[in-house]
Amino acid sequence: MTRLKDTPLSVLDLAPIRQGDSVANTFRNSVALAQETERLNFTRYWLAEHHNIEGIASAATAVLIGHVAGHTSRIRVGSGGVMLPNHPPLVIAEQFGTLETLYPGRIDLGLGRAPGSDSATMAAMRRHPSAGVSDFPDQLEELQRYLGDEQPGQRVKAVPGQGTHVPLWLLGSSGYSAQLAARLGLPFAFAAQFAPGYLFEALRLYREQFRPSAVLDAPYAMVGLPVIAAESDDRAGFLATTAQQKFLNMIRGKRTQSLPPVERLDWTPQEQAEVERLFGAAVVGGPARVREELEGFLDATRANELMIVTDTYDFQDRLDSYRILAEQWQG
Image: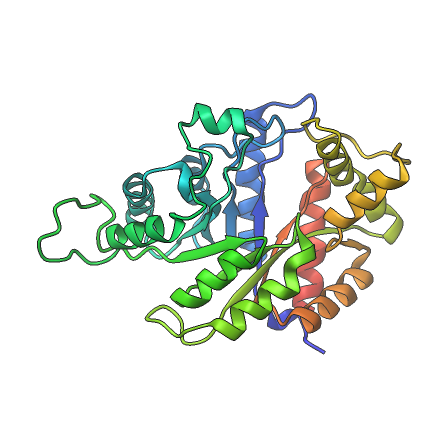
């Protein structure tokens, strides 16, 4: 069995906004969580680009990455991810080149191709509906040029950015990004925190088609998944209803802020089945169950790294969950 302590653990922060709370407090919590998980020796702290979602405060992803990096000292800080088709590659290179210059050796650039929003918000961002469908590899190549060494005769340069070689990751929830990451020899992160159904097929494609590159000699796969650890299985199950309510409201076409946990969810059998499908990779329980299930997950996936997202209503419960996880990881 794969031992949990042999696998790097990282953090995905969706910067959740609680019902009745403020965005400013969300940002304070992000800093506090980054500082605590740095103390607990987590490897990375990533933030994700979303737009026009009332419960997520990380829209200006690069700005928030800089804020978190400025209040920590060792943990790598990055994007999980920035949606490349939403932005000119030059602008992303300038932003992340600036971050890498300010915090050398600590910045990651995870890239996705989804809009991170709905169609109306896509239009507001001036994103064409087909952006990222066929031109994503070209955009990625352009971004790599701006972050790489300056080439002879290169007319447009990212200043700062050129020559910073910010590490790139491809993120995905299907086979597309897995195969592109394999072809380019880049690390790959799969979003099992919301789309676990294609996990094993994506990992298979990535590993079978991987080509060594200047970046990697062998495939490196990270998997994002929800974990809620508490002092008991029952307590963790209760806390998990906050995340389940988010999925339920998403199914119903509602976007809500983080809601308090509840003793019972009011859902139809069809809604329950859909929530369980979306939340299917979640590890929820007391310390012993969390350790056992994570080690089983590692055996099944052979993931090189796990990126943990913990969504609880109360921030202290979130801190406690990462602390309990770290105790099992380091024990």
